[in-house]
Structure formats: C-alpha cells, structure tokens
Image (cartoon, rainbow, N blue to C red; front, side, top):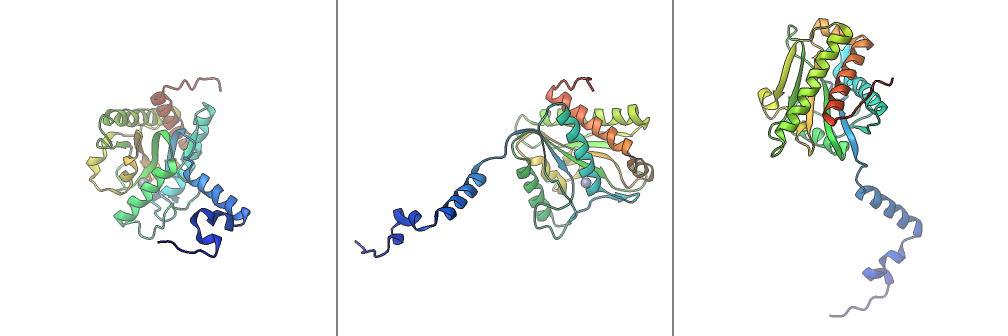
Length: 251
Ligand SMILES: [Zn+2]
C-alpha cells in the first residue's frame, strides 16, 4: 500500500532535517553523554548513608556526615599515590527518591544507584560507622561471599586487608586498641540487609564499619580529626596492599 505524503517530516528518513541544527546538536550531545561509560577508576569509595538515611548517631555526630568526611580523606591519600578515585556521592543527598529508610526496596534501589554511580572501578569500598547497644565497640568489615563465582576469596582478601590496616592504624597512630571484631560474611548480619545490597556490584567489594558511633568512647574519639586521619590511613593502606600499589614513603 502506498501513501501520499505531503510533508517531508512524515517521511522517517526526512525527519532529522525538520529540526533546527541546535536542537539536533543538543540531542546528540545528550546521547553521547548517556552512552559514554564513566571513565574507569582504580577505586570507588561509597560514603555510606545520606541526609535521607542518616545512619548511626552519637556524640553529636551523624554517620552520613562522618562517612563523607572519611571518604574525602581516603581519596586524598589514594590520589597522592596516583590512584584514580570516584565517590558515589559528593554531597549529603541520596541518589534516589528516598522517602523511607526502612523500606528494603528503597534501600536496594539506592544501593544499586551507588554501584552505578561508582562506574567502572577495580574495587568498591563502602565506608560506615556502626550503631548498636552502647557497650558494643570496635571495627568490623563485611564482604559478600555470594557476589559471584570465584570471587569470594578476592572480596574476602580485600575485606581482610581493610580490617587489618584500620585496626593497626588506630593502635599505631592513636594508641587506641580497637576491638578487632573481624572480617564477616554479610550473611552473618542476615539478608536482605540494607547496605549490603551495595556489595552486589561487579567488582571486589567490602564494607568497613570503622568504629561505633553508639559507643561513648568511640564517638568521643571520632570528634577528633586525628581519629579520622588514622582511619583514612588504615583504609588507604588496605587498598594499597590489595592493589599492590607501592604508596612509597616519599611524603
Ligand atoms: Zn551505616
């Protein structure tokens, strides 16, 4: 069947010619941005939580603010060693429409958005501070043994190095004997469990619960820049060792 077309825009092949060049250019630029993957980086750092999901609190501190502060300190150390770094968030806002921090589907959507925001990276490290009964204290690091075939040991190695160096840095730099709560499968905390959705991305991943904000002693420590610097040193050292980067002692 043949149709008689009176306007060139009705012809599919002529459609482009009907738009002003500026509009076409803008559309093409947007398409390029959408289809171009993020530049690969060595390390993706995820500052846990956001204004929509503040996390633990204690000593006047809130987890979502402390994680961003720590991530920025870790980034500086990694960049000094010539590693490229991307943070999943640079401000206090969530990446998704987040209205209920207790809704599992919303937490999952936010964590999936974080993995997407991390883009291509060699590793994904999520930074958190713990909360719980006031007597609990110390450092623990989680990994997901189910992330993918043959990857569990890799993720576990990353988690173990972060854990080891964070605990060591607290002892060496602050003289604080953090309780080494160990490296844990995220299964031990029960699934589905909110932020562990972040450990389901495509690269080796770990989640560091640095110290307990709900513990008065550790919250007081976290008010001190020296503590955040020690934690940043420990996280960076764990990453250097995992990536076999010689961070050197030049500085
Ligand atoms: Zn947290």
